[in-house]
Amino acid sequence: MKRAIYPGSFDPVTVGHLDIISRSAQIFDEVIVGVLNNNQKAPLFCAKERVALIEEVTKELKNVRAEAFSGLLVDFARKEKATTIIRGLRAVTDFEYELQMSQTNRQICPEVDTLFLTASVEYSYVSSSTVKEIAYYGGDISAFVPDFVAKEVKKRFSS
Ligand code: PNS
Image 1 (tube, protein in one colour):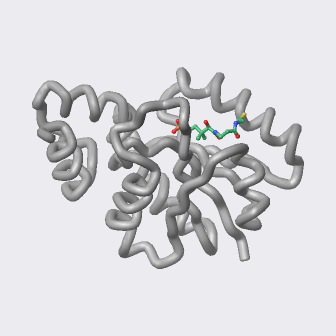
Image 2 (cartoon, rainbow, N blue to C red):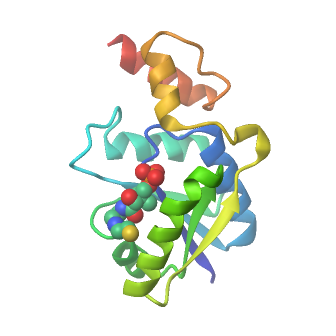
């Protein structure tokens, strides 16, 4: 059983994330979307809500599940018996941080490797922060997130 973790903040999950999730689900037997429960950030959605959004938009993908985690990513990978961490690369600007993170993770946990998938061109500019900024100013985010997520984001900003 080849199991991979796709970790991130996913605040909220975007069409770019969904593209990486579905492509990963074709490569691995099981993909766990690991949602970082980070106390230092003030997210738009709490980890439980982010997991629920991912579950909703991936419900057709039977070998995908979402779990919140805190602490070190490699500890979460070990706990879930995953041997691969998946990260998406949108542009060269992502590379330096991702390279450092993958090498650090490999140093502290050699049995878990990182696999990079390049973003599909049509999603290469999509980010959760941009989605939140556009929604904050009342703009249209329908091109960047699945419909269900767009509705939940709008609700959050109107409340
Ligand atoms: O979506 P993001 O915010 O780019 O995801 C970053 C994430 C969650 C992958 C990264 O911050 C992470 O793995 N955090 C867990 C703590 C950890 O393991 N830190 C050491 C990484 S070198």
